[in-house]
Image (cartoon, rainbow, N blue to C red; front, side, top):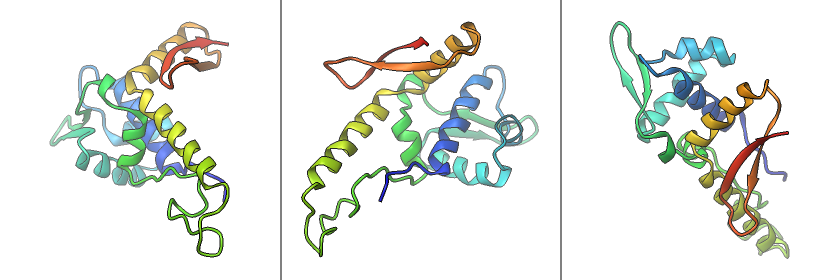
Length: 163
């Protein structure tokens, strides 16, 4: 069973980045995000409802209403965005239950569990602030691909460089 990040998690991160990039002077409507990112409005409504319940975004009602981020960008991790929409990140075949080989733990369980830890650590090290910075660098560097570099000693991102 290959590990896969579904559209729910990817769209949540995309929508949060769009919100952060566009919320400077006024709340951002989901219809604006929908148009810019080609994500259906009804799907965004579901995602933002979950992210609001988890405290990542706050809504503003009435004319001129929409959404704002509810926390500082540096405090919102990619992991928190993904998990706020009930996305599960797990590369084990058994979902961590240790019953994938005839009801018992398989011989590679520790490998896949360790991979889970590495992925979650990486996603914890990526913040909305770092995604914004990479977008700014990408625009500044004429839309060349940006890769995140990790320290050899730690699993948190250090910087983004154009390639």
